[in-house]
Length: 87
Image (cartoon, rainbow, N blue to C red; front, side, top):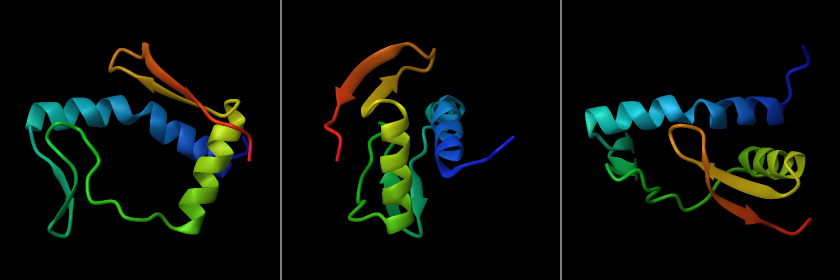
């Protein structure tokens, strides 16, 4: 099996359901040091920038799925789809 950055990112995205469930059960925000980055409402907060590796990985993952960002609920059902333009 060939492991790529895209496959790792897609694995992480697919496993987010377990993290969402855990956060909901714990009703606890996720913090980096003392800065809250995921609220109890599961919203991203206080993320000013991303590094170049993360940027390139996200771009590659979006190219791999025809430039669509698909948001799914905890059951895996598509709830929202955003189509971007090829760079």
